[in-house]
Amino acid sequence: MATRILCIDDDPGTNELVRSHLESLGYEVTAVLDGESGLAESYIRPYDVILIDHLLPSMTGIDVIQKLYESNDFPSATIMVTGTGDEHVAVEAMRAGADDYVIKDVSGQYLQLLAEVIAQVLEKQDLRRRQHQMLQDQSQLIQELQSFNYAVAHDLKQPLSVLSTSLELLERYLHNQDAAKADNKLNQMRHTVSKMDQTLDALIMFARARESEEVECTSVDMHQLVHNVKDQLIYMLNQHRATVTIQDDIPHAYGHAPWIESIWINYLTNAIKYGGVPPSIEIGGVRQSDDTVYYWVKDNGNGLTPQQQDKIFLPFSRLQERKAEGHGLGLAIVRLIARRMGGEATVNSFPGRGSTFGFILMSGEK
Image (cartoon, rainbow, N blue to C red):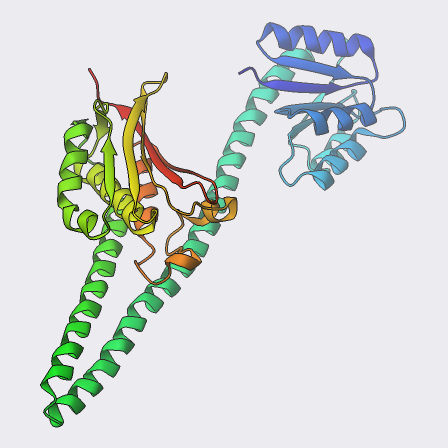
């Protein structure tokens, strides 16, 4: 995509000269004759660089620069173009926020310098954008870590409190020689410890997936993998009287097989837990035009609202009706590992019409 430049100058001849020169260098140029038109144009279309003459009708170039900064936290790069002897104006423009300046000469030789300055400004603008994005990413990461730490503490403290209470009751039952109640309490404690173990396993996998730099990716037979996952969950399927329909020719994927297996296990487990009564589940995949494959698990559950769909892949996000079960990391792990393999995790749902959880990976077909 060509770099877009807006030229604001009240001299039509200068505009045409600048446009012709910059377009010959591959830039896309739009020219206007006054500051108001320039501001209006910058609000309508994004520009990479704005060239601004100082002496404009009704407002100066410095006024334009100031208004650009007032209306945009991250405005286009700006270059003040002034006449010979107006160096003090250039200094004022830089103080107002201009990225650079060029002094015009009557011979037009400044056009060569202008092209060089534009290239330098674009490089600085790109660096500034990356720094801005880095700061945003850091801020988001800090917020996620704060939420993450709170949720970890809560998810581990709650079962520990249950264990503490259970130990007190167990001690009382043993003291009273009530073997039946003691045995029942021991089973409850084993279940609580098992849930803590699952939470810790999920935390470890989440951390490893975030920190892992490279994973071994190969062509994965998704048809075979899905059937293996179904066999692993056969007890749960029978317990919920769930039916699963698997597409005959699910395309191969290119990815890390253990991670892909985790995605299928997570999606199928959720479809069993939160599907209809009884759950009716469909599994399949379709190759797309960009050499990726979209895989899905469709259930007949209650469905999700748009607001719920926005939160479903966030770490430790649990929907109200799902609070009783799980550690809230499953779908966050799915999205994380899908992205680490160059793909994405998706959800498509309507209240009362079930949900389709999907993920996209590169095709593993030769």
